[in-house]
Image 1 (cartoon, one colour):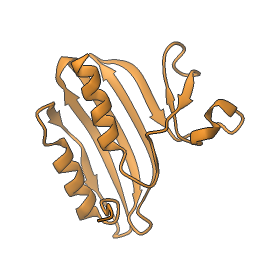
Image 2 (tube, rainbow, N blue to C red):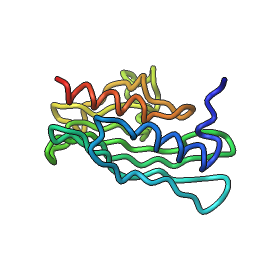
Image 3 (cartoon, rainbow, N blue to C red):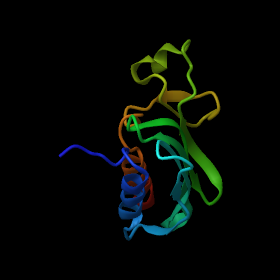
Image 4 (cartoon, rainbow, N blue to C red):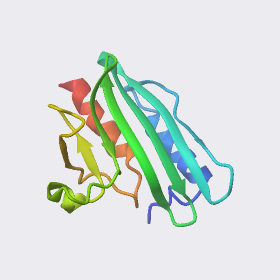
Length: 139
């Protein structure tokens, strides 16, 4: 069965609620809303143990089943560890394999970018991001 979670507000809301209903999530403020039947926004913060949190914002197109824009940031005790964004850097050939998806990592986090193979416009990213943070919590 094909994943249809990006095809409607109801489907994506259910996907997010089911995904975040897990023991590793202490609290979540993630909300999914829409002003039309074609587009939506998902935004909020997911709190994990050991002071880890994931802040996220996605712009969604339910008609095409795509994430049209996103930003994901991971923190520990208020310090930003890394972030993902889709701002294009066409002159950076090290990012060409996953263009425009990339991850900002230390050192020099603003300018140090690596390809983000796990991030996509065509499938939900939140599952992978939650697994990634859960790995940090366990480490």
